[in-house]
Image (cartoon, rainbow, N blue to C red; front, side, top):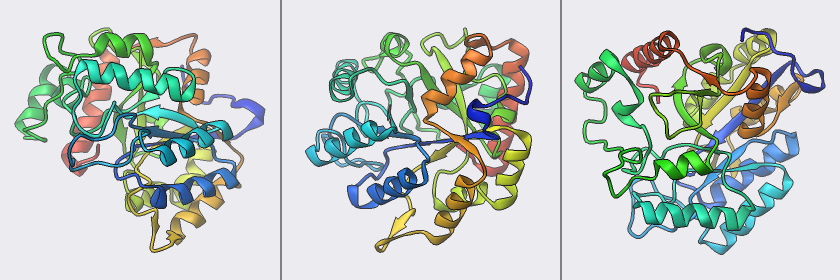
Length: 310
């Protein structure tokens, strides 16, 4: 399961983006996707399918907005993947999450292949301290990371439980985010199954790019060249509504970096497509061992203690 991997079509490396729906408005995300599509970089745009019932701290449009739904469908038709960011931008009960998934299938013709938890939602699955095991869970709690954060999507006694729906209807869920352009080097066995977290079929990692500053810092020319030289794979974690298009223009450094990246001979496919390919190369979903879990969790937790990464 080591590197390097031979990528399709003789490509040098693989690159994709999973864009969380936070703060989405058509005015701030549509220009980003027009630009990516023109470059031939087809990635994953996550959506909420239910509108907010009240104003949320990290809110945005949902596919209950007709114009936004039309736009998301056109993205899908063009070759972008539509991912799931939970049913809505605030916590949803099991019944609401099921309705959100049903709407997703109705809108896009199938269940989501990939998803990410929405930070503030109680229906998040294996989130917060629940991502970790053993002493690492204690360290996370002792460090007081997001002490008020509740995550009960996997708790069978909770009204927010939907773990069985996740297992039955979603293939891949994002977990750890690393400060490494080569996501596959940080997590070489992704997508992986963790028997201690049984409601998720396959986990994947990402590289830090949650806002325009961290995205550009991750995608520097030196990092691009290293990704290509290593023949690696990058799944960027991003919020394209956070500073990528401001005052009527795309951020210039982002434009320059993405144009350069597009010229380097990468395989630019959505998150689910990349993960399906890796799973096939690995002979199926890898079942993570206790030793591998320990190392992966410590790597992420130490980075979080030092830098506060996602």
